[in-house]
Image 1 (cartoon, rainbow, N blue to C red):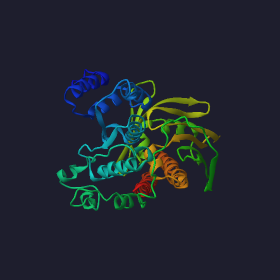
Image 2 (image 1 turned 90 degrees about the vertical axis):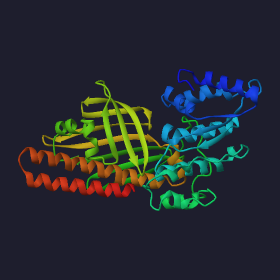
Image 3 (image 1 turned 180 degrees about the vertical axis):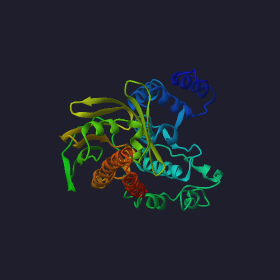
Length: 384
């Protein structure tokens, strides 16, 4: 379809064809185009789709399915659109691949199974999902390969696949998707505390398991000015946060793009940041993608030492809430005692190594970089 057409123009033309020939249609790349036009904001996407499909009495339509490609529109948005299609429009949702790796196909299959088992999909016609591109792969990043989980009849053993990836059966995973309203009321939080080797951490999580707030601190053996200047050089972030693929400046006003990859699942977001002067540090808030915000401050304790304090809040993606339903403590433990703790310690050691090399102490600098690399490798193994 000509990209100059809006989603409304496309559906009107397809419905005119359906009225003539009674041939139903499915929306595929049109949904990806709509997502891009709406900057992947679910509220705006849903508003356009409700105008088209929300009133079957006064405006009947011939749309049989939404074809959702997580590789194009993201895991969370795919689940949200599937629930919207099933629950409000009685339109089927078909999950499909875009020549993904075995890991991508595995996630697509799990999302499809979770969606099909949801209560609101019980009265909607089910179609086969599109994950057959594994036959075109010359090799596979998944071991055993994705193909090994597919029967001769073309059925995916999602129970075995989910156990291989998460140690969870499909029954142990969520049999329903979370509610779509991101502004659901906060409920009582659980608190987890950690204190070890001067590292302090506190985490609170809503009982929905989706909203997580974390506060951590770590003493640093260099000044607040040095700490702030090194930490706020955001493209260097992946040196001490190996779970990040990249951080890129998009303009001179503090707009950045962040990308991370966990077990083949990519998350990205854009954020606005602002440098702080008293105390020195930085604050940020995402404006698209993974929802998070927070700040880092460096409070001086002497001329050559300070305390690094980080506070941030994250709204977990729906896909992770679905997969870890009932286990928020697992996410808390990993976030505060591995991901953030190790990242802060790697930042401390990376800056110490830089300072050692700058003053000509090559032996100490190399040793510290070796410690950073070892911790980075340990964190990458933990992510696996």
